[in-house]
Length: 260
Image (cartoon, rainbow, N blue to C red; front, side):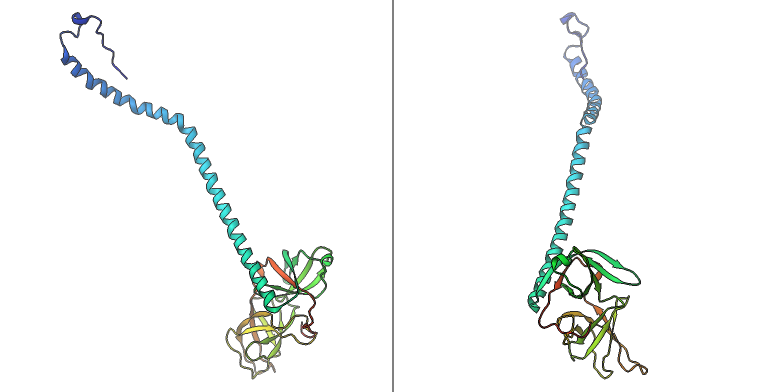
């Protein structure tokens, strides 16, 4: 902002008598006035740019949201890749003929513990087919439709699996339960049971399950003067609440008949 001064009168003007001294006085005054109005102008300029700043802020927020989404997708894909790689390793280690399937639903209640997979009779699925995951035994097929099947988990109260202790080879029957631990019966009371000892499918002649599939590990062993056997409690390796990819085990010459 400037302060107009009338110099039209020249030397006869009202400021002529002041000469150069007048300019010395007026210049700081004009600068002071400009200093007052300059922030006001900047304020209104900022208001004019506020819409642009708001749009830029929204764009940045959108970019951050997309980055978080991409990160979540990447993490999920990496987890799935690692799970599939472990499934492949398990298949190759046991040289099992298998068919992959994806868990598409679950049926968990006080009466049954099961999951639904996206393979059915049109894919060659048959009753009692064993199902395994990257960490070990899942269960067996108990119901089939053309495009899906129900798999009874080994944690189901009606589940029975013939197993053995890894160190001693002592065999027993693993009974499903509703908790985190399954009960292993028919163990010789004199058998030495080691803490965290691996439990594997026994592969009896005629068993539904191939021999040596990891099932779980010993959580605790009890003693009883009443029971003739020594109950052992097993914690499954598979986390049934996080199942996503599984393998159906196709008929295999080493699969026998006893011990479900």
